[in-house]
Length: 228
Image (cartoon, rainbow, N blue to C red; front, side, top):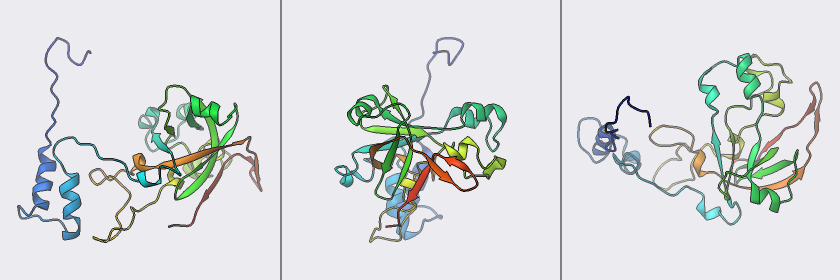
């Protein structure tokens, strides 16, 4: 694969000793101890070997049958913290990518928008078909949508008019647990937002045109629901 300049083994480290130390601490070993209410979570999450666990929200699968994912554009990592001219030409707006079979079944057409609803909120966003996509999944690029006027952009810039985020569909906190306080809806190891636990349903709403005073036509409608 070109990892090395000559044929030789390529070794993967499957066992993570630092994570095992966290796990041992949660079991009561060593001078550094976690809070008691987090011990069970650390024991489960800090497994030193790779593991898989089912996503949250499976109980709502009947009402919200699709998984919604995001992926940060690689170009973002080449210009972290700035919105320079070349980056904005590549990623100035985004669409919700819908599996081709679902796109046809729901009657979507080029230029249509989709209403995306989760247990926590709804957004109405541009849509596009994608054949190379799991039939139970929709996705979009992350980090493109910006608040109007943020990042030094013009208030009418595409990032605010046609860019959007899935954040408005996610709870900040996990469901209540009698064992302790509500925890952040984030990966317990990295702290990253738990995008892979998001379930949604989508509807076709056709063309979408909004008018906001002072900004002309604006093609994005984000309406979060009241917190649960």
